[in-house]
Image 1 (tube, rainbow, N blue to C red):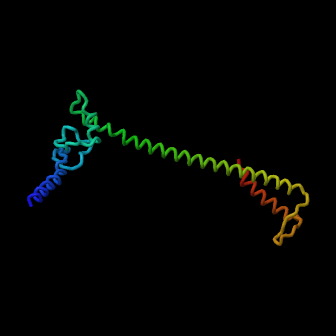
Image 2: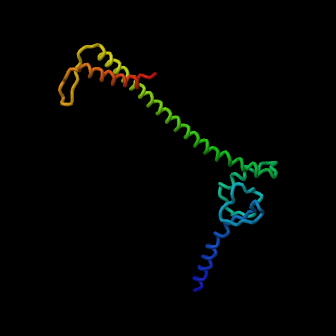
Image 3: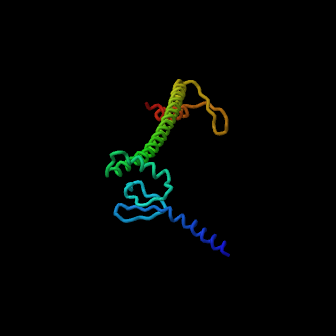
Length: 174
């Protein structure tokens, strides 16, 4: 029975060891703050009243760099800009990716516009050739709705010249 009590006391002590890993600091209004997590980076090292025995490396690294020889009350001001480039570095990476995406989009648009311009130039050339052939007066054949080949009469030739001229007007703009 005594062994059972000792184990229970040992368990209670072990369980409460987590409460010893507490942080205590003064916030910007001078109030005491208790937490199991480290204080924010903008809290100066001299405002931290209590910290766990085993401090995580993430908190000690910025604090050690802020405490240079000859550092005065301006140490918190130097600690804050040290974290600022990290945040702006992410913004620079984001801006770089955004600019790269915009450049790729512009290149795609430019390539598509070049492709469309080449197609318009080809259509223009073909339409001009067709118009020249229609205006030459040589007999021209055309397939009707039943699939039969018929010669174009003067009215059909004029209608075809008008249609081809519309294509030239649309595609031959420079």
